[in-house]
Image 1 (cartoon, rainbow, N blue to C red):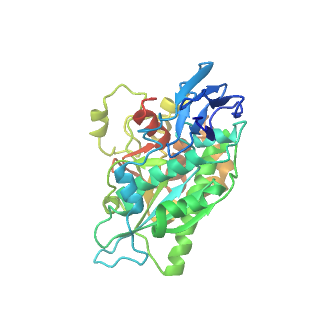
Image 2 (image 1 turned 180 degrees about the vertical axis):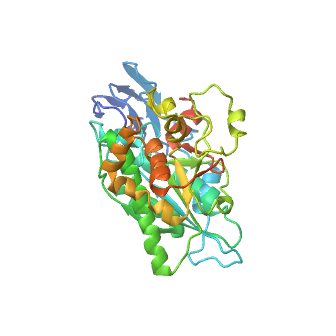
Image 3 (image 1 turned 90 degrees about the vertical axis):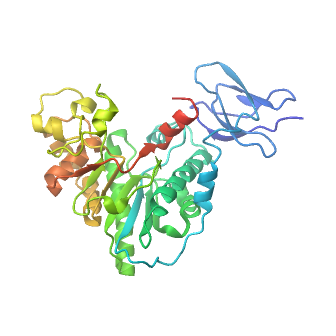
Length: 376
C-alpha cells in the first residue's frame, strides 16, 4: 500500500516537490527525500515526522512511523492538561490585591528555524504547522507556570503581540479566556540589524493592549512580565515576589566564562547595576570601552518584569531608534542587540538600578527541542 506522503512544512532552501525531491519508497511505509528537508506526513493517523536530517547527506529514507515519540510534534500529558484546563472568563475574587499582566511578544519560528531566519529564506511554507505547534508548547508552559501558578485570589491577564499575521486564531485557541487582548501583523522591520527595534516595538504594542484594557475595565496591574512568545518555562513563576518598584532581568551566567554555574547562581544581586559574570566584551568583542560600560551595559533579553509604566517604556527604543543607536556607538558597542540597548534604556533613560532574579526559568523553544530531541 503506498505511503501517501505529503509535505507539512518545508525547512530546506531548495523546493520540496512530490515526485521530484520526495516520494513514497516503493510500496513500503517509508519515504525518500533528496535535496529537500522538512516535516512530512503519511496517509492515515500517523503523526508528522522530520526527514532530511542531519543535514549534509545526498539522500534520506525515513519511516512513516518515525514521528512517534517526537517531543516536538507530540504534546505531553501535562501540556495537554494545561491547554485543556477550564478557566474562568470572569475575574477572580479573593483577598489578594495583586493583579498581573503577562505580555507575550515577538515572532514565532519553528523547532529548527529561528524566527528571524524567515526574513531571509527563499521559500515560504503554507502550512505553518511548526509555528502553531511551537506556540502550543510555549502556551502550555505559560498557562501552567504563570497563569495557573498565581496564588489564590491573584489573577494573570495575557496580552499578545506578534509579527505573525496568520497567528491570531492560534493564540485564541491556545490561551482561551485569559487572553485579554492580542494583535498580530506583518513584520515592520525585516533586517537582522533591526531585530532589537522589532522586539522593542512588539513589547511596546503588547503593553499598549494592556493599558487599553486596564483603562476600559478600570483595572490596576501590580506588575507586568514581558516574555518572548517562544520561551518555554520549566517552573512556577512567583510574580508577587518580584520588586514592584523597578525593572527585573534574568540573573544570567555568562556562557563564555569559565566559572561554574553554582558560583554564578550564588553571586546574588550585585551592588552595581550589572549582571553577574557577564560583560559587554563577552558578546560584542573587545574594545576600548569605559570600565563601567564594560561591566554594566549587558542584560539578558528573554524577559523583563516591572511596573506596567516602566515596561511600556520599552517602546521608546523603537520610536527613538536613531538616538539609541548613536549612543550605542558612542559607548563603543558595535552590535545593536537588545542586550545592550535594554541596558542603555535602564541606565540613561529610566535612570534606575535594576534587579536581577532567577525566578523565571526559561529557555528558547528551538533550543529546548534541540536538547529534548537529541539534536543539540
